[in-house]
Amino acid sequence: MPVNDTKATGHLFEKPLEACPLCGSPKIRRLHRIERFEPAFTVDRCASCGFIFTNPRLTHDAMTALYGRDYYTGASDYSYYDERETEQYARHVWDSRCEAIHRFIHGGNILDVGSSFGGFLKSASKYYRPHGIEVSSYAGGYSISSIGPTIHIGTLKDHPFEDNYFSVISMIELLEHLPDPLFALRECHRLLRDGGLLLIQTANMAGLQARLQGKRYGYYLPGHCSYFTKKNLMDALTACGFSRIKAFHPVEFGLIPKLKKSRGAFTSVWHYRAWLRIAAYHYISKIRFGNFAATSSMVLYAFK
Image (cartoon, rainbow, N blue to C red; front, side, top):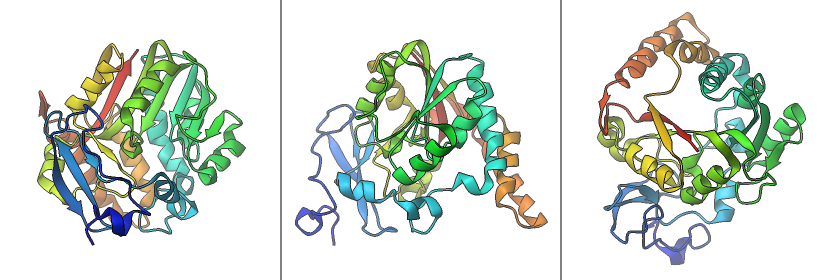
């Protein structure tokens, strides 16, 4: 059944978009049909800015339904890594990220958009006053119990926070989930104080990894709406008012924390062989020049 057959799938999908949601250009073309999930879905690419987006998109209700308990406990086909199971290992990455942020911003309020169970915010509380936004009442309720009432269960469109309130906002593997990324970037700019930092981790679809793998690339997932290149994301950040942008490939911290985190999934000494793959990917990701990147991992720091 074609995914853009709105008569047959109207209860799941919205009306197809006729223009790019990032730049507004009507020059959009079909890129891939992703059939490894049910229902299948399609993604288009803008010929003007290179933005890739799911089209048509899941309805709000269908999208929200993805993030129930099964998503967070690994019981569904499309699921999330439950950080609570291996928190002592994941903390190596969270702590290293906080140290990297602290080199630029020394204190104040931090907001993690898509805060899940609050693990990153626990690390961030060493330097910052933690706040979160989490769409899932299951994950958000857990983080409220461990962090406190500064966690908002909802979205960037219905939060209670004031303008210029945050020194740091993080969106770690989050922006790709949002159907209106421009709104999210503008809202983050409004919430940040002057000199504040927005951290974004997402895939760079112009990276050789994504281009070679095509529709097999693992970032094409039911809950992902928006797929960026480094260039069009930097352009969007600039258009939203951010004054300075710094890019990191693959991330802004080193290899050792990632190796330590990976131990949380090891049950045998033979699993340490994965360190060779992790190290190789980390260093291959350093191969970049201009808009070229060997892999599709990136982190952007955008300053207001």
